Length: 337
Image (tube, rainbow, N blue to C red; front, side, top):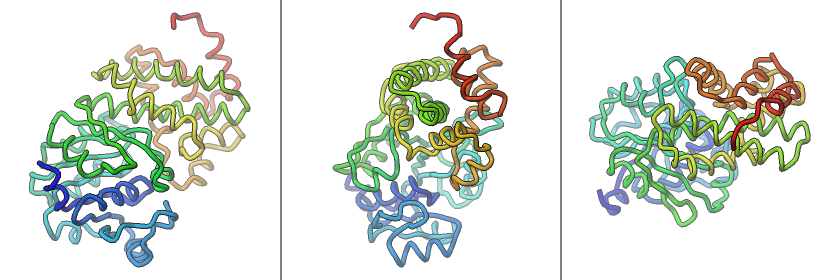
């Protein structure tokens, strides 16, 4: 489909959190009509009247073509050309089941969820493929801190899918002069990159909280990337994908910024706060907590070496202190870099 098609298209983003709102606003600059679905009717009224989403990205002025809606019946009154799921991983299957009856099958579907299904270890594109009557599915992932994109700072993302139509559509809908879209056919690697980096964001927050410097941060990111590659390849990904935006790029951003929810979890855990209190205060989903538990158990079972992940798992579970986690990593048997 050519770009002129997408300039006249109807697009919906499902999930009105920070990133969902930012992506919907970008799409509104390129498409004829964009809807943003969120459950709260009151929040939709506020957004439509004030042209802002004060709960998540209060400084972003919403494009006039963007409209918030609170029901799927209203969202699907007219056919949609592209749908982007921006829900947390634990809600993705349920919401896909809710959406499925409204779809014709010709829609292109993307998701921007940086997590996996807890019970099955399935990537979100797999979950969507199982629940939706569509074939053309892809993922959007990269170093995308919503607050910075909302300020129109230069940034980039990756659209990944085995289908050329999907990456072409994603590029047309989400590209702007300040938001560059790269494309990939390695959806396995792109999804796992966005998922695994959350573990090391928690670790980064812990390191900053206890006062370690740049040498330690470099150690974390470089050896964290090695763990991402080992696990990703075991799951069927291309190792080179982790050297790009969806791997190393996302890892650097989320380990370096206190805007990252997972970073903040680690930071406050190292200050002695209980995990449940940190998550409650955060008020948003931190995918890394769930991901750490799932990946640790799976890696241990499959004998994939992930010592940093093991340390973070034992810290968030209360078994180790941050100091014990660092000591475990620094006294391990020597390995080749």
